[in-house]
Amino acid sequence: MGRILLIVAAVVLAFLLLGPILGFVFGLLKWALVIGLVAVVVMFVAKMFRSSGVRD
Image (cartoon, rainbow, N blue to C red; front, side, top):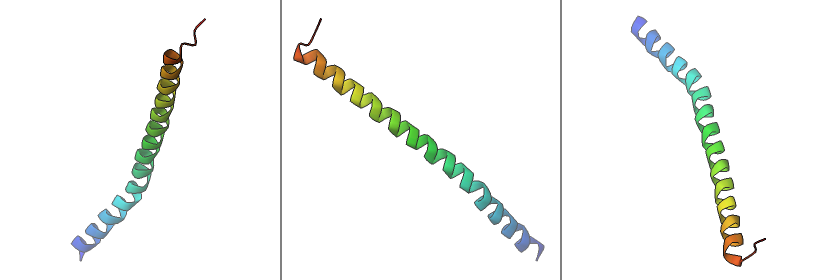
């Protein structure tokens, strides 16, 4: 009986810790995608201006 309660307590604790950990991981993934998208747009715009001959 004690072993079953210990396993149940471990599973509950794992689920309680899993929520914030997954939230942190998906938050990092979201910001990585946003920064990557901004970098791609900046590179595309820089390439457009460089190849179009628009210079001072």
